[in-house]
Image 1 (cartoon, rainbow, N blue to C red):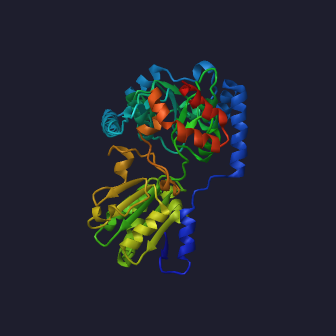
Image 2: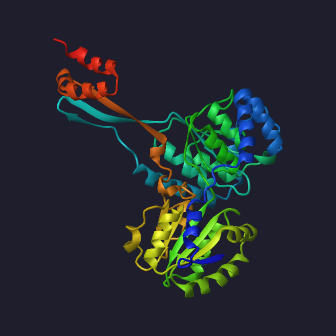
Image 3: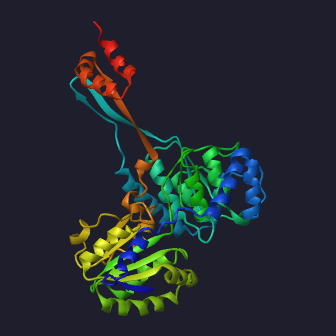
Length: 428
């Protein structure tokens, strides 16, 4: 991990680079993605089957794109019952948290006018689930359950099945979350199918779920045809720590992020130089024990960073500039600093709250803004699966009371018909 000091002359430039770390465009990737999306839009199932054969080494027909109920039951037979129960526990905790986010209709009276808001769930949502380096049943739960809590009528799922195989726990998580329509399609072609619709896969109103740079680019390019959850980049953690932290625990938390993939960001911000001296050898010791040590090592080499600050207040200010996906306050009395945190996807307080809790079963969503987008994006929530309509109802008397200011504004804007639409109702 690279060590930099906040007192160094180059630090403002380094911090600026960190805060702008999200790369939205890769021309080569975008060219490939656009070609696949165009093909799917024009040729539907035929294009999907073609790319599934090419990328997943799997030959399908339109009738075999969908995973049948028997395969889900077979997944239960293959699975460890204790893991299934763990997924059920996680699902319940995620559901309990998101139930508290539900928004109700409301209205009020204002001198003859009725004004309000009506909330409707989206009709159809598409969930993308990766099937590459690792299987993520937790992501199925985190994406599908808020949609179900919001009362989305139809949730579909697309996931690649290279060589015809799909992780049984991904299927079980979908079943626990109430997802019944699952398609063995991945990559850009899956995003295109959900965005445009095919004879077999229905068009959705919104696409959610993580994916590689091709999937992320595809989601960005179909935005407008459909809604998407957020612009996703590599996963990341920032830990603000003081001398009270256990370096063994700190090293484990940093490595838990680095093992995600080679592009993950792992950042420690601390005013304690002695902590840096103790945690670095501990990271190396634990790294040797990890099954995914190659991935974690590459991640730490490319995006592992330690920032030595003057004090904790400066550490908080630096974190706010970086706006991390996950922020751990591994300090004495973390609640005292919570009010100063402005930008973070999810905040973990204290020495006994590892970020891994948020990934699985604490309850809050683990679909979070990355790459500094926590400045304006929020965690995935029930709000992402509803839309709102404004309600306006005026009596004639109420309309008369606003006639003069309304028509003045309309005529200043050169919209005479707007003004007359009000005045004609008031002719006696």
